[in-house]
Length: 419
Ligand code: LLP
Image (cartoon, rainbow, N blue to C red; front, side, top):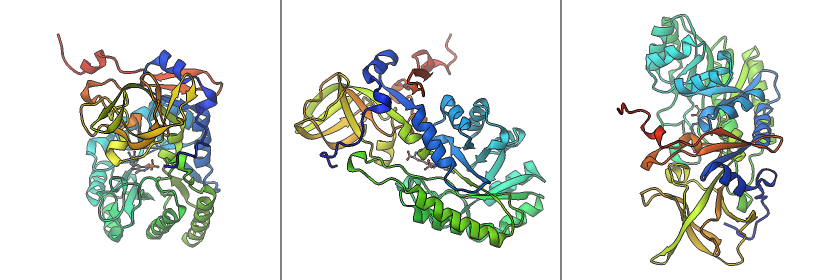
């Protein structure tokens, strides 16, 4: 980490008073910015200049219903991964035709739920295609292929290639066609998602070429869905480069238009961005509650356990972490290595290991975790019976609004039949 580089603007969201927000809504909490969210939606919506291009927001990244309404308002459609996500999307006002169910190992009942709600289903194995054929004979379906090569920031999120459960092997096109024919299913789309978080456009474009090659084997497609994975630079202090959207869009436009000419008809193109839409619109705020040195290692103890933000523990993910006191960023003349930890009863509860941090961090200081809007709240849990935090939105006019309440102690026993 280059600590001399403090050029990044840490004054979140129009210099909002973080202490006031924490006093008002409690610590920890997720704070989102409507302006940033709308900007990122527009970047994804306009990625490809082609009249039948649509970006489907992959809501697993963040499914807060108030944020979903903003995403819908910006003209994005959505991907769902479960009946729960379909249900919430419908509640957020998305039309069934705007929702795409990209299921994986789902039950016939789940497929029926999607179909009964008018939502198109993607299947990602021959056996799931059989299942869908039995319940949706004569209907429309999309096929998720695995082009054989994946990408991603961690092996756990590479979703194509031989080391993953996802997608149908691209050599099985004939088998797909046979099953579809057996049940009079119309294959209206092919889709893929090769992995999460790329910062270079080239491998994505190569992956798209593979998918388009597979798509050519199907007549009468209505769409080709290229998947998500668009990365954001988490290493702000190192001035990590952003994904070059203009390179990506030019590359994609060229490949797609050439393919479409050869295919002989115009087909809708979709993408499935999750992280890019929400990550940078969210900051996770918490409080420093204890400081200690254990046999030479300096620890900063906060209320941000891995029940609140799972990513560092799950994927060794890096998030920039900064501290504030009296509305000011602690830049720290003097710094030393420290490990930032949460309040969960596990040694692995580490938010940031061995960072060079100001020596003068004190109890009561605010800790802010950047780029926490994606896969933050959506991966929260009640582990250790901790309460999931609240979510607060800074609206375009600068006002703040509670968009999800913190859990209560009563919520922890809501599922029991206690007399
Ligand atoms: N489409 C499909 C079928 C997916 O499985 C995913 C993410 C996406 C789209 C959106 O990918 P994105 O644009 O957000 O990269 N929890 C991990 C990321 C898991 C991604 C799972 N699939 C993390 O925190 O990094």
